[in-house]
Length: 219
Image 1 (cartoon, rainbow, N blue to C red):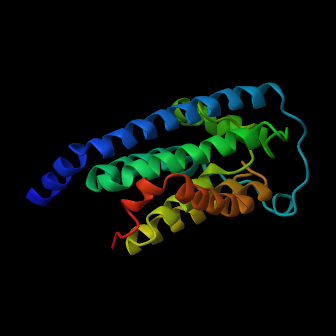
Image 2 (tube, rainbow, N blue to C red; image 1 turned 45 degrees about the vertical axis):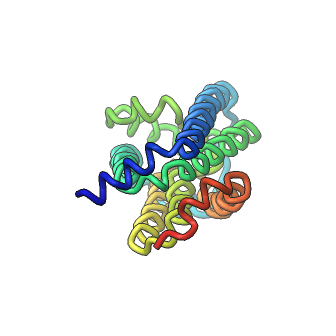
């Protein structure tokens, strides 16, 4: 316990770290606001439903719990992880900000409707947690899948911590499979998410070198 409090004291009394924390918070807030704007835009400019090589062959399965409650629990665990190991907070927040910024840009480029809008509306009304998540997400924010891409990004960030690496990669696979069998995303939204998330990770390492240096030697 003393070691836990000691690392927090060291972390939160470092002026340089506090400076980068302030930047991280600002960037994350801006990216989430832009995501909100992009979501509202996609709601007003949705296009048509298109065919999909996987979805056309798969029945619709109820994945509401994974999609909503699962995502909410995942975020709570991520917050707890930040409390346990604060040195990961600045880089994780900045990489997350870049992730949601890139996603908000991509969202407004292509206008498609969800593969199964009726089911999407069903799970939205069946799960109260959806009321929170739908402030930054809707059925029309398709490309690319955050349920697959964001856990994968975190897996790369926490790569050197083996149990966290496998945890986040597993969450990424579960999220990707869930949105496909639930017909909540097209296949391209999911499969592209892994490549885009990897690119965002590498760009974040280059943009936020000092913050990444806090975790680069983590074991």
